[in-house]
Image (cartoon, rainbow, N blue to C red; front, side):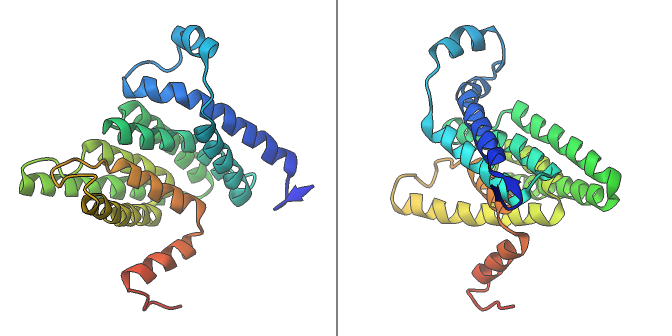
Length: 244
Protein backbone atom coordinates (compact mmCIF):
# COMPACT_ATOMS: atom_id res chain seq x y z
CA UNK A 1 0.00 0.00 0.00
CA UNK A 2 1.29 3.44 -0.97
CA UNK A 3 0.39 6.87 0.39
CA UNK A 4 1.55 9.80 -1.75
CA UNK A 5 3.75 7.35 -3.72
CA UNK A 6 5.55 6.22 -0.55
CA UNK A 7 5.14 2.71 0.84
CA UNK A 8 3.29 2.60 4.14
CA UNK A 9 6.15 0.67 5.74
CA UNK A 10 8.41 3.70 5.31
CA UNK A 11 5.93 5.77 7.31
CA UNK A 12 5.96 3.06 9.98
CA UNK A 13 9.74 2.94 10.20
CA UNK A 14 10.20 6.72 10.21
CA UNK A 15 7.58 6.89 12.98
CA UNK A 16 9.60 4.37 14.99
CA UNK A 17 12.70 6.45 14.36
CA UNK A 18 10.83 9.47 15.72
CA UNK A 19 9.91 7.57 18.88
CA UNK A 20 13.55 6.58 19.42
CA UNK A 21 14.83 10.10 18.78
CA UNK A 22 12.24 11.54 21.15
CA UNK A 23 13.37 9.17 23.89
CA UNK A 24 17.01 10.23 23.48
CA UNK A 25 15.93 13.89 23.56
CA UNK A 26 14.71 13.48 27.14
CA UNK A 27 18.33 12.95 28.14
CA UNK A 28 19.89 15.32 25.60
CA UNK A 29 17.81 18.35 26.63
CA UNK A 30 18.83 18.05 30.27
CA UNK A 31 22.49 17.65 29.36
CA UNK A 32 22.51 20.50 26.84
CA UNK A 33 20.87 23.03 29.14
CA UNK A 34 23.55 22.27 31.74
CA UNK A 35 26.33 22.50 29.11
CA UNK A 36 27.24 18.84 29.59
CA UNK A 37 28.27 16.19 27.09
CA UNK A 38 25.25 14.33 25.70
CA UNK A 39 26.79 10.99 24.77
CA UNK A 40 29.24 9.62 27.28
CA UNK A 41 29.48 6.95 29.94
CA UNK A 42 26.67 8.59 31.93
CA UNK A 43 24.27 7.96 29.05
CA UNK A 44 24.87 4.20 29.21
CA UNK A 45 25.32 3.90 32.99
CA UNK A 46 22.73 6.39 34.24
CA UNK A 47 20.08 7.04 31.61
CA UNK A 48 19.55 3.76 29.72
CA UNK A 49 19.16 1.50 32.79
CA UNK A 50 16.59 3.85 34.39
CA UNK A 51 15.00 5.28 31.26
CA UNK A 52 11.53 6.79 31.62
CA UNK A 53 9.29 7.12 28.58
CA UNK A 54 8.07 10.60 27.64
CA UNK A 55 5.00 9.70 25.60
CA UNK A 56 4.16 13.30 24.62
CA UNK A 57 7.56 14.26 23.21
CA UNK A 58 8.02 10.88 21.53
CA UNK A 59 4.61 11.11 19.86
CA UNK A 60 5.23 14.70 18.69
CA UNK A 61 8.50 13.79 16.97
CA UNK A 62 7.06 10.60 15.46
CA UNK A 63 4.10 12.54 14.03
CA UNK A 64 6.36 15.30 12.69
CA UNK A 65 8.58 12.70 10.98
CA UNK A 66 5.59 11.07 9.29
CA UNK A 67 4.23 14.45 8.13
CA UNK A 68 7.65 15.50 6.80
CA UNK A 69 7.96 12.26 4.81
CA UNK A 70 4.45 12.72 3.42
CA UNK A 71 5.04 16.33 2.38
CA UNK A 72 8.62 16.09 1.10
CA UNK A 73 8.85 12.50 -0.11
CA UNK A 74 12.17 10.73 -0.50
CA UNK A 75 14.26 13.87 -0.94
CA UNK A 76 17.26 15.64 0.56
CA UNK A 77 14.86 18.03 2.30
CA UNK A 78 13.34 15.11 4.21
CA UNK A 79 16.75 14.04 5.53
CA UNK A 80 17.58 17.61 6.53
CA UNK A 81 14.23 18.21 8.24
CA UNK A 82 14.41 14.88 10.08
CA UNK A 83 17.83 15.87 11.45
CA UNK A 84 16.67 19.42 12.18
CA UNK A 85 13.39 18.63 13.97
CA UNK A 86 14.79 17.33 17.30
CA UNK A 87 17.25 20.23 17.44
CA UNK A 88 14.47 22.77 16.92
CA UNK A 89 12.36 21.13 19.62
CA UNK A 90 15.36 21.10 21.96
CA UNK A 91 15.79 24.87 21.41
CA UNK A 92 12.08 25.37 22.15
CA UNK A 93 12.16 23.35 25.38
CA UNK A 94 15.47 24.64 26.74
CA UNK A 95 14.81 28.30 25.94
CA UNK A 96 11.36 28.03 27.51
CA UNK A 97 12.72 26.39 30.67
CA UNK A 98 16.06 28.15 31.11
CA UNK A 99 15.94 31.21 28.80
CA UNK A 100 19.11 30.08 27.02
CA UNK A 101 19.89 28.64 23.60
CA UNK A 102 22.96 26.38 23.93
CA UNK A 103 25.73 27.27 21.47
CA UNK A 104 26.21 23.55 20.78
CA UNK A 105 22.69 23.34 19.38
CA UNK A 106 23.04 26.47 17.26
CA UNK A 107 26.41 25.34 15.93
CA UNK A 108 25.02 21.91 14.99
CA UNK A 109 22.12 23.53 13.11
CA UNK A 110 24.65 25.77 11.36
CA UNK A 111 26.78 22.76 10.42
CA UNK A 112 23.72 20.98 9.05
CA UNK A 113 22.94 24.11 7.03
CA UNK A 114 26.45 24.21 5.60
CA UNK A 115 26.24 20.58 4.48
CA UNK A 116 22.78 21.09 2.96
CA UNK A 117 23.81 24.31 1.21
CA UNK A 118 26.99 22.76 -0.19
CA UNK A 119 25.21 19.64 -1.52
CA UNK A 120 22.32 21.63 -3.00
CA UNK A 121 24.66 24.27 -4.41
CA UNK A 122 26.58 21.69 -6.45
CA UNK A 123 23.60 21.18 -8.74
CA UNK A 124 22.07 24.66 -8.45
CA UNK A 125 24.20 27.70 -7.61
CA UNK A 126 21.09 29.81 -6.98
CA UNK A 127 20.24 27.64 -3.96
CA UNK A 128 23.71 28.28 -2.53
CA UNK A 129 23.31 32.06 -3.01
CA UNK A 130 19.77 32.02 -1.60
CA UNK A 131 20.81 30.11 1.52
CA UNK A 132 23.80 32.37 2.15
CA UNK A 133 21.46 35.37 1.88
CA UNK A 134 19.21 33.62 4.38
CA UNK A 135 22.13 33.33 6.80
CA UNK A 136 23.04 37.00 6.52
CA UNK A 137 19.43 38.22 6.58
CA UNK A 138 18.32 36.06 9.50
CA UNK A 139 21.25 37.04 11.70
CA UNK A 140 21.27 40.63 10.44
CA UNK A 141 17.62 41.40 11.23
CA UNK A 142 17.89 40.18 14.80
CA UNK A 143 21.33 41.72 15.35
CA UNK A 144 20.00 45.14 14.35
CA UNK A 145 16.99 44.74 16.65
CA UNK A 146 19.26 43.65 19.51
CA UNK A 147 21.66 46.58 19.08
CA UNK A 148 18.98 49.24 18.58
CA UNK A 149 16.83 47.86 21.40
CA UNK A 150 19.85 47.75 23.70
CA UNK A 151 20.75 51.36 22.87
CA UNK A 152 17.21 52.59 23.51
CA UNK A 153 16.24 50.49 26.52
CA UNK A 154 19.68 50.18 28.06
CA UNK A 155 19.39 46.38 28.09
CA UNK A 156 19.23 43.53 25.58
CA UNK A 157 15.98 43.64 23.61
CA UNK A 158 16.80 40.17 22.36
CA UNK A 159 19.49 37.67 23.27
CA UNK A 160 22.42 36.97 20.98
CA UNK A 161 21.35 33.33 21.08
CA UNK A 162 18.34 34.35 18.99
CA UNK A 163 20.64 36.15 16.54
CA UNK A 164 22.81 33.06 16.06
CA UNK A 165 19.78 30.78 15.83
CA UNK A 166 18.17 32.88 13.09
CA UNK A 167 21.41 32.89 11.12
CA UNK A 168 21.71 29.10 11.33
CA UNK A 169 18.07 28.55 10.37
CA UNK A 170 18.40 31.06 7.53
CA UNK A 171 21.24 28.99 6.09
CA UNK A 172 18.81 26.09 5.70
CA UNK A 173 15.64 27.88 4.63
CA UNK A 174 16.96 30.69 2.47
CA UNK A 175 16.20 34.38 2.04
CA UNK A 176 12.42 34.58 1.54
CA UNK A 177 11.64 31.84 4.06
CA UNK A 178 13.75 33.37 6.85
CA UNK A 179 11.94 36.67 6.40
CA UNK A 180 8.65 34.79 6.67
CA UNK A 181 9.89 32.97 9.79
CA UNK A 182 10.88 36.30 11.36
CA UNK A 183 7.48 37.85 10.59
CA UNK A 184 5.59 34.85 12.01
CA UNK A 185 7.81 34.81 15.11
CA UNK A 186 7.21 38.50 15.84
CA UNK A 187 3.48 38.10 15.18
CA UNK A 188 3.17 35.10 17.51
CA UNK A 189 5.42 36.79 20.07
CA UNK A 190 3.26 39.91 20.12
CA UNK A 191 -0.03 38.01 20.40
CA UNK A 192 1.13 35.59 23.10
CA UNK A 193 2.93 38.33 25.07
CA UNK A 194 -0.23 40.44 25.12
CA UNK A 195 -2.24 37.44 26.32
CA UNK A 196 0.29 36.66 29.09
CA UNK A 197 0.40 40.28 30.24
CA UNK A 198 -3.38 40.70 30.10
CA UNK A 199 -3.90 37.51 32.10
CA UNK A 200 -1.20 38.66 34.55
CA UNK A 201 0.79 35.45 34.07
CA UNK A 202 3.75 37.66 33.18
CA UNK A 203 4.72 41.13 34.38
CA UNK A 204 5.86 43.86 32.01
CA UNK A 205 9.41 43.69 33.36
CA UNK A 206 9.66 39.88 33.09
CA UNK A 207 11.64 38.29 30.28
CA UNK A 208 9.71 36.25 27.73
CA UNK A 209 12.00 33.93 25.73
CA UNK A 210 11.75 34.53 21.99
CA UNK A 211 13.31 31.24 20.85
CA UNK A 212 10.00 29.28 21.05
CA UNK A 213 8.36 31.78 18.68
CA UNK A 214 11.21 31.37 16.19
CA UNK A 215 10.79 27.59 16.38
CA UNK A 216 7.02 27.76 15.87
CA UNK A 217 7.56 30.02 12.85
CA UNK A 218 10.14 27.62 11.47
CA UNK A 219 7.84 24.61 11.74
CA UNK A 220 5.00 26.52 10.07
CA UNK A 221 7.23 27.47 7.15
CA UNK A 222 8.66 23.93 7.00
CA UNK A 223 5.30 22.16 6.93
CA UNK A 224 3.04 24.60 5.04
CA UNK A 225 3.25 25.43 1.31
CA UNK A 226 5.12 28.68 0.76
CA UNK A 227 2.33 30.34 -1.24
CA UNK A 228 -0.32 29.40 1.32
CA UNK A 229 1.76 30.77 4.19
CA UNK A 230 2.40 33.99 2.26
CA UNK A 231 -1.31 34.32 1.47
CA UNK A 232 -2.26 33.92 5.14
CA UNK A 233 0.27 36.52 6.26
CA UNK A 234 -0.89 39.01 3.63
CA UNK A 235 -4.48 38.43 4.73
CA UNK A 236 -3.52 39.13 8.35
CA UNK A 237 -1.50 42.28 7.67
CA UNK A 238 -4.05 43.73 5.23
CA UNK A 239 -6.92 42.91 7.63
CA UNK A 240 -8.43 40.53 5.12
CA UNK A 241 -8.41 42.92 2.17
CA UNK A 242 -5.76 41.06 0.18
CA UNK A 243 -7.08 38.75 -2.55
CA UNK A 244 -5.53 36.80 -5.39
